[in-house]
Length: 136
Image (cartoon, rainbow, N blue to C red):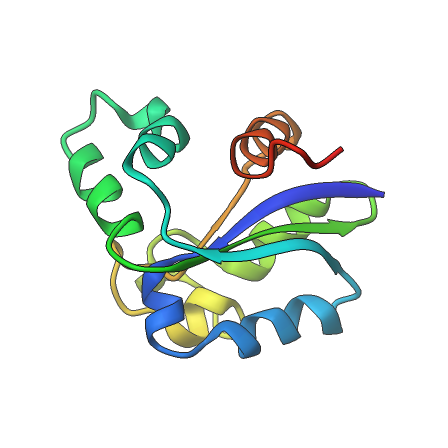
């Protein structure tokens, strides 16, 4: 089995979309192996988005992910679970996301696009260690 990190961002939690999105993962055959509703700290947010630190939108990313509770979880499935999750999410810009994807069905704003999923196995390992350091 293969694991990836998923974050239902504050806008997804605020809009009451947790159940809908979790249901999609479960119906797809993926398993939630760890989940916690938490307010992401500024330090963790900065570490999570470190690759964007020099970009002009970095402060906005940190402010958004820390503004209220997010559901942080580890999703498990077959090889390339991260790829399955990313395809279910839809493209980053909701205007381009296909109907049937999470962003295509529910998101309307590029800055508040509901969900984060690791973009590869290395990112998944790093992000899982950041958010769930005790998970083996």
